[in-house]
Amino acid sequence: MLKPSIIISGGGTGGHIYPAIAIADALKAQHPESEILFVGAQGKMEMQKVPKAGYKIIGLPIRGLQRRFTLENFKLPFLIIKSLFKARKILKQHKPNIVIGVGGYASMPLLFMASLMKIATLIQEQNSYPGISNKLLAKKVNHICAAYSGMQKYFDGSKIQITGNPIRKDLLKKHNREASLKHFKLDEHKKTILCIGGSLGARTINKAVEKALENWQQKDYQIIWQTGKFYFESLKKYNNKNVLVKEFIYDMPQAYAAADLVISRAGALSVSEIQAQGKATIFIPSPNVAEDHQTKNAQALVAQHAALILKDAEAVDQLEQLVNIIINDKAGLERFEKNCYEMRKTDATEQICKLIAPYLESNAQSSS
Image (cartoon, rainbow, N blue to C red; front, side, top):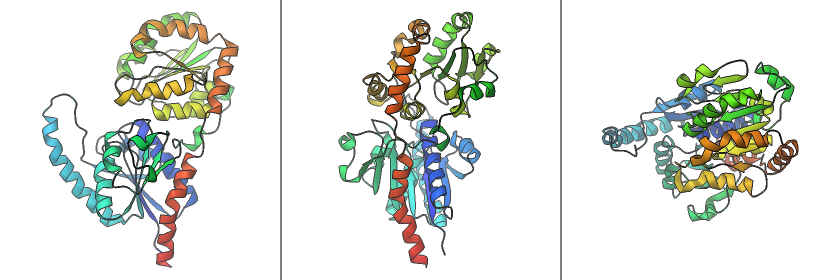
């Protein structure tokens, strides 16, 4: 019997990669006989993160369009053509039942070529405002799984299913606070702040935390600080027994469990994870995103008294004081946690797998 074959493509940021891994894990659990291959962009973070999760990945030479004028943009047409040919070769070799795109420019060549070859396709859009790749692919794919309602503005409504965002299984369950603090070698009796700005880092969050750090340490708070790849070297000097400075946090379930308060960007995946964990959070939305969708993501929680929002332009000056007020308001923290947890959606991967299942089952039937 032929084994079902699935290819998952996309990447560039954790917001694309981790939903992809969550989908792969769920598919593997439900269809253990299936073969799952990832396709990403050469030199990008998926080339490390996906193998670490236990899956094979092939890189395409694709690159994104630079917003500023650069000679690299002149190479882009040649890289796209080269990536399309390589994508076609991958599809002919692996003969997938379905190709899944999770966003990012790495998904474009593979899903475009799959649609030309009449292979079933599905895209998963994490944000309230779709990325360029998913916008361009939407007319060609069979299914669109969206995290937010109102996506008919951008996509064919007959293809859309509202699923929420896929979250890794380990982030759907809460961990013990004391054990998690012990895991990070931190004191269970101290207030703990978790600062996360994405896998590459958030300049404003890092500047705001750096400015507040002396005051927070005087107040005997503990800080778990994910600086991101671009900022770690300049900020690792602050590492001490009360300040854990990390380029990237792999053990996020424990990090959430250890935290009394989270400071975060408001990317779709971060919001979904925070809801799943029910954490009191100050969101500092990035201003450098299409249609200001991070602010919209955060405002959905603020409207339900499930979080606070601080403008990027005000964060450096105001974060220190806001944290000092909120972290000592036990009733307020508990209210945020309760309301946030009630907004969680935990069955996204199950809904996506249900859409994919008929394509895998048809493979089994045709080979029997």
